[in-house]
Image 1 (cartoon, helix red, strand yellow):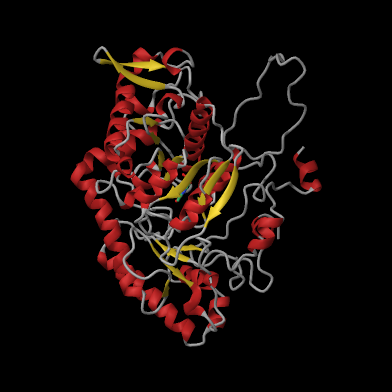
Image 2: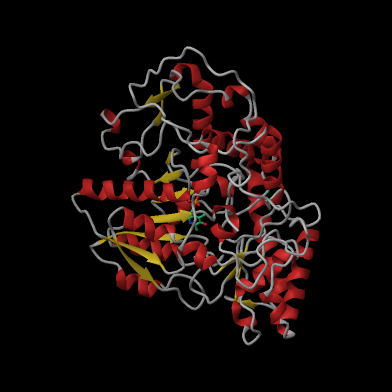
Length: 519
Ligand SMILES: *Cc1c(COP(=O)(O)O)cnc(C)c1O
């Protein structure tokens, strides 16, 4: 076997493909080979005459021979990609309860508006005077985001949450340097998303962890003990990655500020509090938002992200370029690092950022209205709590009491069953559900983090909960073996994830014999 089974490291005990049938197909699920494995040398989608009379113009750097692309007919390619698309599980096929990821419905209205030729066909190098409408859209989006966050400045160009973190931390570093007080430490709670310490390290800081308390929130006393004149910032997520609101956040902000440090907030979970809480009122100095989570732009293989950063007044002069500023009743574009933007950290991204995501996010906001956005947040919290109440008798809830938009369980309920969190997730795949987030956050053992989002109806939540409860009962009933064999019904059985991570096969190379035949 080449290709898939190698790349993904088929589990030695399990059939790599679908060994039960002669063809390897399972019903109408076709066993899919890599395009390189389907190669028929000489085949081509179109017949074009050999070009005649062309003289090389690349000064000797032109290609010497074939570059090893597979030969395929048009129907082969169409079938390949159609079949792959049918293997893909997506929010458009069913519930996708992946905690921390906010896999919510992407309204078709957003897509329709993003495809308007006036947005979709823009060229990034068009003169600004010809894209006034797009700039106005960018400014309107910034206005909504400033209103929702209660913060005075927005940097829209970062391309994702992690990129927004980088933007925020570079801005903080620039502000501290300008104060003549560069500092070297960043404090990060131990429940943080991995991107937080990674961002701080990328900016050259030393990272110190702050423990959580028994209620799943930051331990305020431990934080105070770590704060000092060398701390540049605290990076806190709120609601945090346990799905809990940091209820001592005002005291946290006061402590951070009295140490002369900045307060960075990871706002990836903003979807739980939109319209209810303005982060600016909590004393936050910089906060990234994930438009692709909170404001429903497709993500997870479905499209690029967008991670705008809200900045407090003291950080605004350091914001990345380009800026859009209001003067004389119009919008003015600031693209260079001089004059009013002399302290800017410069560009983080080509042009203005992911304009297609801006159109989608603004369409989502304007079609929901302020009241609709607030209701979406409330419904997301309601749905998570509905699942919490339905499941907490059978699974082990990590922190008692109400949660925000996601609910955290750990693997205590699987103790002595022989099944693990991973087994449980694989069994869910056989039942037709995308699993919840596993083993994150790291502060509880064998985490199962469930985020249903407001997209799901009660019927869909009940179907999910009934299945989870039945699997929990089966695990407790001593049927661990069936869990170890899962998934049995998916296109692939249990994969050897360790080998796949340690020895990834990232490029398929044709066998030498095949290569010679092709050349
Ligand atoms: C998703 C997420 C991020 C990273 O966002 P990306 O857009 O994937 O880069 C950071 N922090 C938290 C808490 C998240 O949930």
